[in-house]
Image (tube, rainbow, N blue to C red; front, top):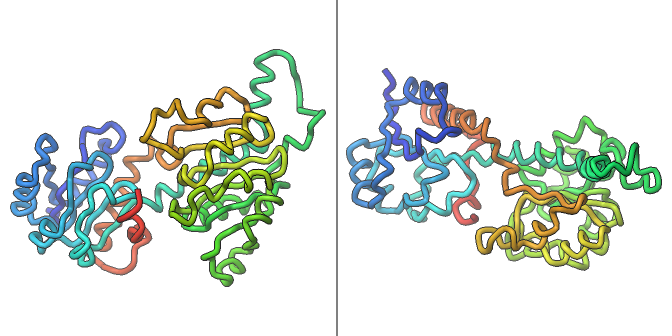
Length: 343
């Protein structure tokens, strides 16, 4: 019989978070109590914690009504691991004084793998002009390649790709791109020289990266320092026919400035995150308004979330939680400090 007590706050009826295999794994490996999500009152949450005395809690998307406070955490001495399905912990975190005693795991690295996969897909799709060629064929007025403008169709094998930011996602993009043989440039002021050498990367100024890349991909965090890192002046440095991919944070780009370049047809873009996301209707975003253009490809902030993979993500997180609980040691799913404060 499983002896590790787990209190689950996730919706077990969710069609992608839980499947039969995930439920079976959960029940076989943990002594599980499922929180009644109909009542999120502090009193009810406190009651569950006191009665269950969990060693592990499982949270994630859809748990915004839960607030992990200092009082709540300190009232459960048995609690050792907080496992969270998602990247940001900010929405349910309000326990700066006692959080240090917990091992906090999240699925940010797993999500990062999917973001990196999306990035490589956007690079190939954008560099090869597949959407433009598809539209021209549908219109019935073109067959073959863009012979009059051959520089617009590039192979990833011969392209120069610039990566802005080399955190976990950026490093995964590098790993995925290595078999293609593309020339890689990176701009990251915090990248240690020895790591750059180890990865065979050139860490260059943002100006050089923008001027020399056929496509750039953003993987930096959204901070005051990086707000509108890519502005009108930066965009003017980019080659005509080059592209920009943003699967990181919308605030990294001056949206209005990029929309002007896209409307003029000078650049192409693949955008998954937006500057005023959740603050205005997405249809009012200047880039979404240009989505009918063949060189403007937009997606609804889904680069890191693959529905068919969510249940696997839950299982991987729980396996890691169990391993850490039983054996201790470092974990690749340990949440970064940024996860507590950045949305």
